[in-house]
Length: 241
Image (tube, rainbow, N blue to C red; front, side, top):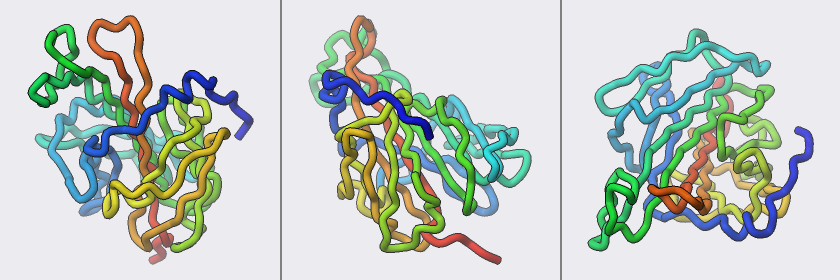
């Protein structure tokens, strides 16, 4: 990966820790299907499938595979044309406003004029299913945790080097949660000036590494903050038949 320009000091300072209660996005293989999961920790919540704004699948060489998003009653299912090595998903959660009585409403502040806080949240997921994959460009993911070693080959209990990009640029000071499902409040590492960190591979089964960032927005009638969430999922040990 070629070097990318670093965030300016002002933008780095604007990166705030995400809300502890914010929901994340990731994918899991269930009953032979690739399901999108919207939740926090062990929670697996229903959501409007129409909020999935994009899905991309690739083979081990980084070539795109056609993928269809099936809109189910309480979530979305991904149907790639052939078994993928990599899957990326984006969810546009829309604008949210916090009322004085601490209730979140899924509308911008122009429709909630008494709001005390307003933001537009986006969730991004990157899943790696096979060893030795060549990752494609992931520009469609405005926040992404990019592994800098093969996550399926690192091994449980060992450190996986990663790089966090926001809007395509390295993001400094981003806190990484090493096991989003089992310990969603436990910070495992923080990115350096180049957006890099090392996170321990916790599980033989599914690992979900996650991160959040809030970025200020100006001259917008509906929001003052853009909230981003990113997850990286993979098996701690590659599955072999």
